[in-house]
Image (cartoon, rainbow, N blue to C red; front, top):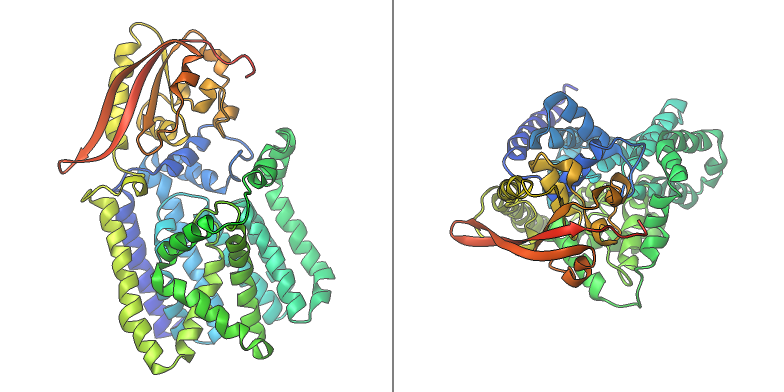
Length: 489
């Protein structure tokens, strides 16, 4: 604790956390954040899209601080602090060096994915925290005394990781793979391993109970529902995933991702036990989703937990590299990573130029103000609900207007609408009018299909979000009169 590098680490953590707190109040919620905030207004054991850890966190801070961008995000910032602490101590155990542990945290904070998910409220923030905690405690259990305490804590953190996101199931797969690879497979049958699994399932039990109560809706959506999207083997989705990971990691760490793997594959017989542990937590999830991308879309954030242990291996690669390689990493790769992160936050905070579909935060307050004005006028003739062709616009309008109890999604015209299907019975809105809003970023709506459920539809306006005399996005607003809900809902 008195080591100067530990003090450097604490000072860096304080500065970067303060910076994130300041950034967090300077841009609108992105749709996913508004959606998970909306979860908190409908408390449940779990939800259709994701387990509840993110929304529970938002609920706690919203109860204390009120409904604001800061309240939605502060829990994620605190999770990032915890992730850094666990990765610091895991790296310290691996290197037996506080200096290298500190450098590991510097590298982690030079990736775009960690900077974004340390502020933006998504299930990935708690997942990264609980995954790092599980990694740390299982590492302590396997390398430092095989104590019951570490196995129990590993099980608890694994359970909360599952309570954050289903991809946490890889934790026990990774652990079993390591034990088999290191010829300790008998530990898989041990009381301690079994106890950690049972504890994880107990922590995860709210999600299991919710699924039992709701015909396994979430489990089916994440398994067979995803499998329906599988297509013939091709490379389009793979190229998309590669592009997204170059962005998430920055080019330097994307290159190192494969350089590290190649290094160990060419020296498999000499791979140390600690290296095996980190490799098992880094590459199975990475390889799995790269293979899946050959037949379906893989979202850019699905691989992220694997990058935590990879960062430690990347630093080890740097330490063992030749001087020429070190100079390229130090004087080319790292500055580029820092520059891309800085550019990323400049584009988020300052509306310099439209980045089209890449922009998911600009204009929500302006749209909400316009919708509020229109609804107040239209409600003088008849009651109006609000709906869209996706979950994003309804979630944002629920946060930035006072109308969350009358905001629906595609379920208005008989389409599946994720969690909105569980929150609203459209039959209750029979005879109302509707305000339809959709964006030029997602114009895929068949107005003829919508017309089947209304007596009349007419365009109110094309509402433009303009910053610095540039059009950032367009919203199309329709008034839909005389709603007759689908009979099968």
